[in-house]
Image (tube, rainbow, N blue to C red; front, side, top):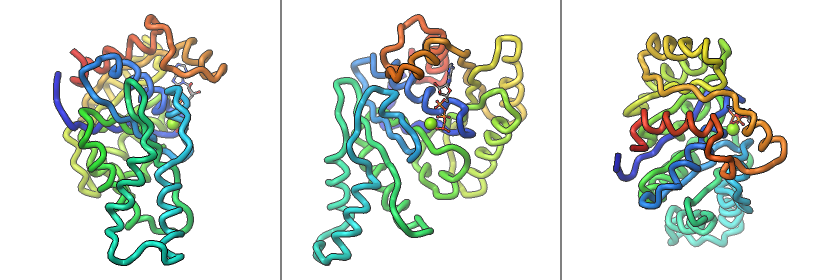
Length: 258
Ligand SMILES: Nc1ncnc2c1ncn2[C@@H]1O[C@H](COP(=O)(O)OP(=O)(O)OP(=O)(O)O)[C@@H](O)[C@H]1O
Ligand SMILES: [Mg+2]
């Protein structure tokens, strides 16, 4: 399916496999040459870039922090449009690879309320992602991204759950909270990670109960475990790896792959 300017986000409880799923998707999708892809690491504690084999020196948070400092030192003149300056600085830290580009959000220092920064950031990410056919975001664990509304321009939300009550509960809350804060995803999918074949009906049934679609299950994969242990990027996984094969099927089901 060829669509332009779509933003997908991967969310779910901590440790369910969000970063793994996002990385496997980027790996598969970036093998298609006719589509430009932006990967966004939106989790400050995360490592999407290293799982994708890219080393990033700076994050959006670093840029924002430096910017705040230069404002307080009076280095930014009132006549300069802050948003434009920030936007161009964020473009500068975007890492380009032959197959996809990647940006890490990182964290901002200081104040308790991020509202203004988050709004600013979401707008800027919006502008940047318009240059790509597909944006894939690896979100923070849990629900905070919804209350901070950093995913308000996301089209499709992919919720990953592992075989745990809390995984399902978080999935349910993500759906409910999105409604409460008026974020309208075009679609929400549930993705199972590490369900054994005999347990596969669980995520399928839970998705039906939640009123969202089930996209499929990714099996436990020894290659993923091994690569993770050895610190090797998942982009190098052998193509026959079960997790990769399953992710391909999920991508077909959610309309991102023919
Ligand atoms: N299908 C799988 N097979 C084998 N190992 C897996 C699989 N999925 C995830 N893992 C491993 O489980 C751990 C957690 O996965 P991952 O980092 O993707 O979760 P996460 O949801 O992004 O976590 P966090 O909430 O901390 O960001 C990692 O060590 C990863 O390599
Ligand atoms: Mg992660």
